[in-house]
Image 1: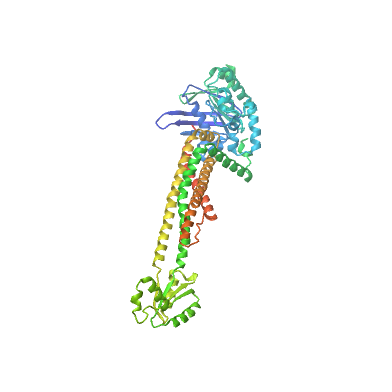
Image 2: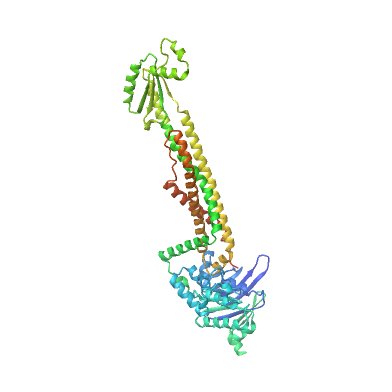
Length: 227
Length: 314
């Protein structure tokens, strides 16, 4: 699903975001990405969603060579990558329903189909009763679940989450992770950046560790189970 | 499986989406009705000026066209031609294919008129014979009233053995026509300048709108919106600004004409003319609305092209 081969990102001015990162994530895997702030977690996720482009190396996502993707093809790539952010990135002048419907509107689905799928997604995250609400009146945890519903509504094969539980208390964080596990069980590949080590360790999944832009650790679940 | 593969893109869905976006941008304009009204009014006032001048000019041309056909030829006969001969010449010329009417002023009547109007009645009485020639006022047919054809008729009349002096004073008609051409050119120049102003007004308004909706654009791009999708509501907004600006221009011109028509009809009766100020005709209104909508569209296109590509999610 994701294949990075010696990928580097250098910013103008000499700052290095990533240097020579290589890894492979298979379809239907659930992987955590961890490391200190500034280690390059966000940069890596942004490169997968093509919010940033690599300076060197080869990156393949979902069968696409990202280094060769033309600018006008980027939207079609993003429709196949659901992205979840710490700050939710919701549109505050629209209802919960309209926020979740946006990816389907963008993709040009019919009115009925949109209604059906949005309700299914909201039901999945437990917010069906709030579909007419404005995002601003929802709690942080609820807003994050709206963001998740929006990311999964078009059923992308890959979900990326950047610190999805960063602002949430442990109880809500656990609920969000529970949702992610459910998506993974129906075949969605997940890559979740988080520095909540305690939570990640409990879930017993593969962990990629970044430090200063370099990949310093790749712990498959089996090895940790053994150790 | 990605959504793309299951997507329905028939012409019906395409039309439905365009209608939705058009209505949504209309709704957004209605939402900020005060600022929308102000933008549309600026567009309307800018367009009303050249349109109003155009209407005034075409009215003026219809009057001056009537003056044009009033250009008549004065045919002074030689003094040896008697009133009787003049009368038979007039009869003969009446049958001429290029002549509409002939008015005969005999030597006799010319003398009487001169005596009456000049104040030299007594001096004239002292003369033995009448010094005034007979005069035929020739009115060419409507098809022959242009400067050129009238001139040809003048040359023909000069060949008559009875003719002494043949005069056609078209100089003032020609000057008027030249002035009209200048005025038309001025309206075109003004319309071009104000059209450019409309482009800038709409472009600038759309630019501000893009700035205000920056976050929304970023998020929409983030979830896979194409540039065309993001561009569309702004283009429709520009289209509506232009169209409503055109409607406002139409109203302004129509109201101005209504306000002017009373005094002008009054003036026309003083000149014994039944001139009626004509308002905007269908084709002018159609051109105005189409043109203003296109100006709005192009104005927003320019702004969108420049500013949308610079907004990328981070």
